[in-house]
Length: 125
Image (cartoon, rainbow, N blue to C red):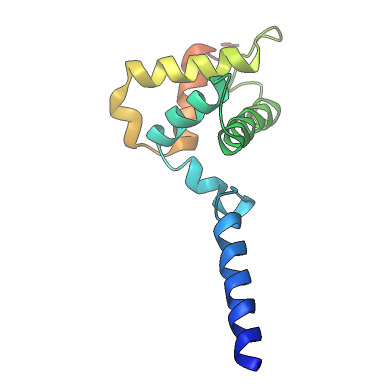
């Protein structure tokens, strides 16, 4: 009887772990943005109309990161017009990466910064 309980608990735990691995968590969010290739993939996820739940979550994560970046960037480093949408920012980053394929191996956060600064250059005082 004890062996049966141990086996049942083991099977239950293995099944839960497998499902939990499919959902991105705060601990894995940096992995999703590790380089330009990851950013390009996230841009695609944010722009997809029909996608899986995980792809939608990744797209929302990326859009949330961009909102935080916009809010936290010093005004002197980015000149984002108020009418620019998240979708336009995502597209600007995607196009920038296609124009600069050498940046696909660079840190993802640096790619976002460079792409948005190129698309919306800071005002010169």
